Image (cartoon, rainbow, N blue to C red):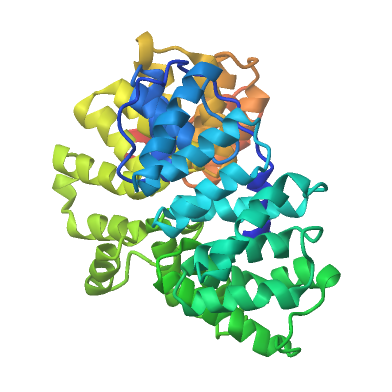
Length: 492
């Protein structure tokens, strides 16, 4: 599945997390938006009673409110955010857009669109990301009538040379064919706005020229005048407009540029440059870019320290993680300093660092509730080690341990993600009948998966599970356990 398809899939997902209901007492607009990892951490802090975290999580969640709330509370927050937006706080404009959506049951409305566009143009990268979601939603809008008053209100400022007004008007032209479908009308204002260094206009042009954008617009609306009929030329324009938008601080442009490099559309494939655009998009508030760096990075532990250091300084958390591992002596791996540095990288957006940090909090600091928050945040972003740590915490440490149902859920996800320890734990739960049905056959199945991944204890456990039913296989498993860890599993 390509990146755009994953983004479209995520647009259809609806969260249904219910936590604390009182958020109206939140006093601060956050200094910066959350990423996927810090969003899940905020949910945990919210559950623990921190109302500011409840507010931050509610505002960040792209597709539905993650918390319970009352209409009165949301209305009060909207008034406050709107007033701050009018005073020039662009993050507050983004908050007002999200709150408007909540009040209006997530309908695509002109009010929310206007708030998000102001916030995006004012430097709130997360609102730029939300503008992309609005575009997909607007294309599905059958009745454009509610947007007509807003559309008409943009005419006078656009005629006076207001690039944001022209861009909003042109974007509605492009997305809502019933408003004004002729490309000759809406294409020129976007060009002028982009040349006037309005990043959002350049980002829109990059999408329109891209292959996905052409399919969306031109099948019904026709090609804008002056736009090349050559696919190669359109690809190059799409890439160049994306770079322009990225340089002007729009994360959607950075994201589009990375996609072009992956697909070789308008530029030769260049994994290093692609990573740089993803890092910039992530830093500017585009959640999918952070997720992509977690999904796949071109860095390797063997890369030069100078290259890792340079990338880490630019905000590439995957490079920071490898750098930390390379520069930390083995005797310092189980220290408070190494733990806290892992957590810093986790909060940059690294789900892998969340798993590492959670393990270290558990074994070094023995702060189990905190360890669980980081483990669950990393597991939510599909880091198998984080899932394993969460399982261990529920099995052994949280509320006296032995929460077998919760533990088995996390261990199963860890195993599904390919983690040997998670598979071995599920096998052990079957072997002992902890929450799962006691079955040596099922236990042996999971022990075998983990043993094949060269986990010594799994081979030993496999030998135990098979000793009464398959003596030959049991001996082979015991021999492999001995070979993998002679000090533990060889008879003396």
